Length: 562
Image (cartoon, rainbow, N blue to C red; front, side, top):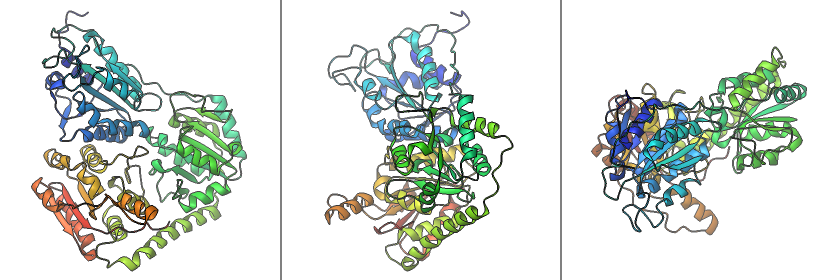
């Protein structure tokens, strides 16, 4: 051990690891089990500490940071309920392949039954996190902190990125220390390099030959392309092969809507029309950034026979789910780069007929949506489609839009113009409500020059509203749009469709515009459809100085057909 290093307590050792990993943000709600980590972080000036007000939002913010930056989002929560309250965002990050390091306090190693913030098994929370993370660790010795933390960041970044959980037990129920009272001199912190899966050159060669021989190739893109920042390679390959690009529902933004070969998303219930046509016409489908065994692959497999499908899986290892010579695991960006290099000067002749058909198909979808909105332009309560048209009118293609779960997500997914992965950010397969606000706060902190909009139903927003003051406090001047219908709208609609009636899904919503004003934001309530676009413009103008909230009084409506 170096005599030049100072002795430190366990909280300082955790803080040092974050500094050495280059962490820039930490999202947290305080608690007595993590006081020592706060103490350590108080002396790390390179980290901006974000004090949240609701523990679920802590992990949701870390998830958003991981998606937006590609670097592990870091959050710190207290033991027991702090961990449990933040589990949804961790599970969501796992499904979204978002890198996260989730750090928590914990009850003592040999805690009594019914310990403070504990249950009978002291390691119960650690065991639970094993099911929703790539790795869960319970540190038992102060000297293990550097190694465990380095491994945590390494695992979070490597292969298919995702969340890890690290918990640090308290000395005793009411001790001011974690792990031990005595400070010690620890060895210098050593980062562990990120591991990526290199593609096999022989596989690249085989797949390139099949693609060049195909008459109607299609590329099926997954979120792995977004996570590994391979959108440019995807576009280049699409143009080289004159191949339509379809994508999984949670990979919206992987290619811009204006791209000539944008063919939309596939899903079990609402597949984009051009997507269905492209897959029906295809004689070879190259899947990249998808993962074997997932629901999206089941959906793609139902439309594509095995002999026509090549899969480059976005995974940590090629487990038994990957079968045959046409299914491999590799980093999406490295694979696409290698494939482009192998194709070299190869260029399929420009398919003007297909390009024209796809452009006309996209235009037809937009015309259909506009026609379905037309009879509802003067509806009161306001029709959601009218709000969607207004949102497209006031937002440029550089704007970030984060959608919460529910009807707002379905409407926004249908209407929002897509230019990049931030054009429409959604929770993903875990589908945790409360996504919109915390994601927008993080996005505005990372992209202060861009307009950032969060959209949520009144039910979802009530689950996350506690951090609206956080947006004002930290200068995250977002525009929050609330669809207020006094219900958990999507479940209201589902119950009505299934049973012919609804139960337990309606409630009395407060005046959100007044709440926004009390939280230090601009609050605007809209009841007349003629005022919607003006209210959104007023809200965006207000975000030059503070957050804004536009509350739109809407009614439940069936989704438009696409």
